[in-house]
Picture 1 (spheres, rainbow over the protein chains, first blue to last red):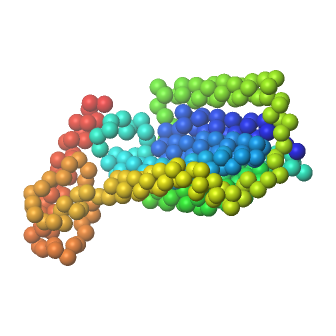
Picture 2 (picture 1 turned 60 degrees about the horizontal axis):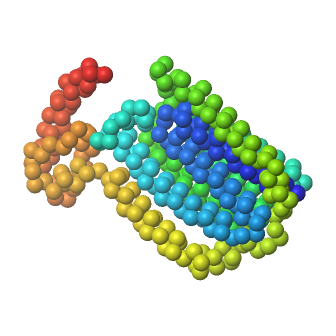
Picture 3 (picture 1 turned 60 degrees about the vertical axis):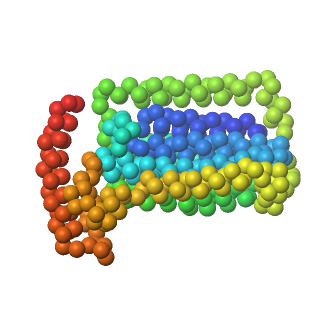
Length: 100
Length: 225
């Protein structure tokens, strides 16, 4: 039987890798994918606790987090397309003003 | 057996995540991220959450990543350029912060109180089944569920507003021939049913004017940098 702390440690490592990606990447789409990785790490924590405590609430939260992630994907990719159309680049260092 | 599976899928998840961060080409990153999602779905199955595992594969690996890959293909994203020397310090800072974060997590998991949590095992229950999740979602957590639907509607409207091209629709009305769009170049000419020769000529003139205006403007912009 696997201890709960293994799942928590795995989740922490995945979250940390996502943080490193957000800090070091300059491409908007790559940063977006790193944020998705961080959301998934938190989802793993939710499901692990839900399963180990026998409570359904954690998995309901995971469901809602997935919905928010899908909405975020739609809006975020829309913004990325708008930025690319105006600047011909996805480098976030060049997109330094809010004006399109 | 379970330990072996955990190490297999956990190792796969971490390996794919590291590959995702290490790759410079966004398409390789996206495919590595799909690997992370699939191995996490396997871990959810081990945690007796079959519904969440199925939703993970369908929504994340299926829908969101298809959207991301579609945008990567649409924009024809080039490989990430190396950042200028002034920003090179971000990589050691990122790795250092990651080490601190991992050390914090390890410290918390090694606290004396944490061992009580490990006494628990996965409860043999029907918590992860679709029926119990649906019951919880439509009774106790009905309000969050409805708020989520409003959120999706807002995201839908926002995405359409962001992604549409405004200049075409204004030009297609044909009301103002010497209307000048702002900085972005006008999109390729699309022949609408209401177009006449005059609107086409106005469009061509506008494009020429804009190209002439763009040349000195871009030169000036370079000079200020």
